[in-house]
Length: 356
Ligand SMILES: C[S@@+](CC[C@H](N)C(=O)[O-])C[C@H]1O[C@@H](n2cnc3c(N)ncnc32)[C@H](O)[C@@H]1O
Image (tube, rainbow, N blue to C red; front, side, top):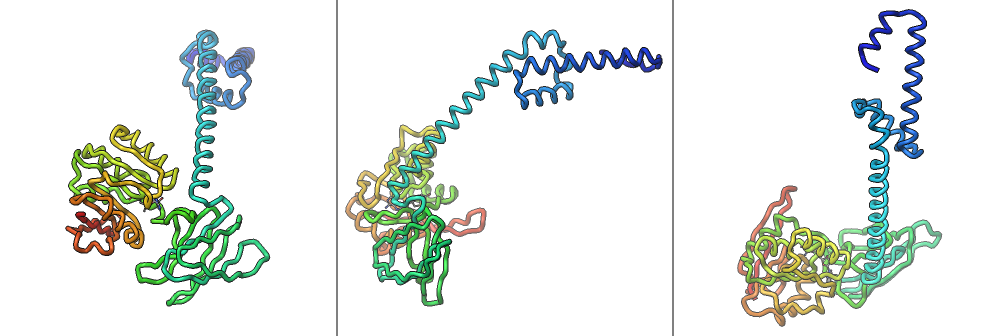
């Protein structure tokens, strides 16, 4: 009904005409109901949103005749296609994530209800544990250097140990690995670890290098398209992918964690550099990186120390090694420079450059 007609009924103001208006209103309502019922196939939520759009007047300019003939089938079809596409997508991505997590669980040797504790320091460590939500009391444990202890603890563990400056008490989460290491002050501390395997060294947990530091590392190593860049413990692949993207360098990333390898491959795809880079799920200590002209590291100091003989054995003279935050003990003579980068959050990062 047009605006002028409505005015007409109001001006006349007598009863039958008002009645007529009410009847028309009712008819209009019936018509709307019919349209909604027909077009939305009985889906309550779809109907609701259709009603909303009618009220908003979004389709009020289209004649109801037109709507009845064209709009509903195509809308329904599009809705159906979109729905099936989204269901299929979420089904496959859930399956993929699940199988990746299962693979990680196998490779990293920590089940979701388990906690792994490793001793990376040179002395044995005495500690006490108590299972959370369990009646069992404190248990005393001694872990020798290099050993891994595993506990089934679906609700987590409480752990206590002594160090020079007093005792430490932490709560540990199931499905995670931890490692006794020395902190910056040389005191015993418990850190997150990357896996619970007994046959592989835990070089460092996953912490990505900030992009500003990545850029500086590549710049300091003077990377060109002639280089082959290896990142040992590559995490999400950012260093190798940036070297390929920015300088056209070839690269190889090595990491033990299959989830990191998947992330790295995805990153390379997004950057369009899959022809230049490769990612290998391997233990760095057993890997062949002899083709590297540049090696990048973001590992803990004791890991750099472990890695040094391998770097000496495998790298050709002249190869550059750039290490984020930690020096390579015993390579003081090979160090040719260092720089400090302050990131946006105010943290200072030192980058050490070596030449083999
Ligand atoms: C601190 S992250 C560095 C990530 C990346 N290089 C970066 O700078 O952004 C250390 C990585 O080393 C990996 N890692 C630890 N021990 C390893 C081992 N034995 N072999 C291969 N990778 C290891 C971890 O999974 C983790 O992703």
